[in-house]
Amino acid sequence: MNILNFFREDLSEILGVYYEDEKIFLARLAENIETAEINFEVDLNDKTPFVEQLATKIKLFCNKRGWKISKVAFTLREGEAATFQTEFKNIPANEIANAVKIWAAANVGKDARYTSLKFNDEIWMEALNAAIVEEYISAFDKNSMQLCALTAIPANLINEERPLTPFNRAIFAADILRNNKSPNILAEKISAWNVKKITLTAAAIFFIALTGFSAKLFSDYHSALKRAETAHTRFETFDDINNLKEDFDAATAKSAALNSIIAAQGVNFKNFNALVKLGKIADGKIILSKVKASDENLELEGVADSPDAVKVYLYRLKKYVSPKVKLKNSSENDGQIFFSISINLL
Image 1 (cartoon, one colour):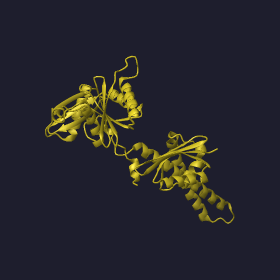
Image 2 (cartoon, rainbow, N blue to C red):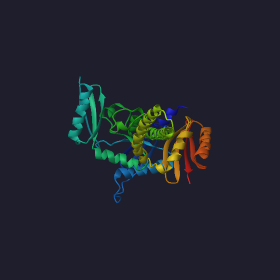
Image 3 (cartoon, helix red, strand yellow):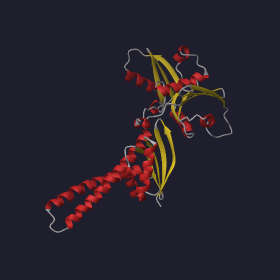
Image 4 (cartoon, rainbow, N blue to C red):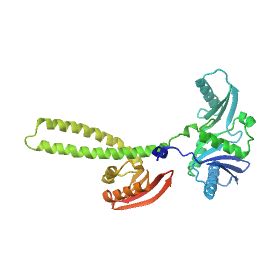
């Protein structure tokens, strides 16, 4: 099993979307391409923004179809974004980028979101108001879908590519997302790595490592003090104490910095001892992606390289943390076991 796959963004299933004439055209890119057409008319009596109504309709349809969509690519209608195509010859790439930025600010505003695509000696530019872009992103976020591509279709492609049917327009944006191509107003949202998983895992590992390190320093520091208090203490013992105190002070400073990280994840330090024990029983076959504590419970989420690794981890939790351990759920994907565990500390 390649554990790095756990941290990669999953682009194996992408939903391309295009809307026109009260119809939503969907193209699901997985192993094959599936298409679907939905009738959709904006409810003028509903104060919910149009894009949010649209995203909700799409989410309901995907649930009925059994499409587990997380990544969405949206193709804008002609005229929805400001667009322009012009000739650029023998101009450095950095100057082209600056020219696109100036054009976008002049046509949409200084907060414009923009992108471009070069065709030989010509360049296609498109821009959209930042507030509108955020409205699109928010609409899909509220429906547990991540909008990662937003684009208009360059004029050159309309003339040269396959016939631009509504479904092909939906596929156009999905293909841009999957292959990380231009033009995409949301290009910065495409990444090979899942930053959220990496951040949570790093915070959990940092916390577990630091708590174990701090506990050892506490023990060493107080042991040294006890030795110093006994009769006939040698002078070098005080040097040891001073060195330990410096290490301890450094760890204390790190702990203070860690507080903000843990607080952001909802970890309660009343369960400090239980969290330290988590660090002691960890091994390379288990990676925790989420650690959340309340007054009574610990909630863990993570990934293992085999079902047996999960069983061993459950045994260790029951033995060293609390006998009240429950495996809430587990599922297998590409040889990895994703699990969540609840621990009652009362």
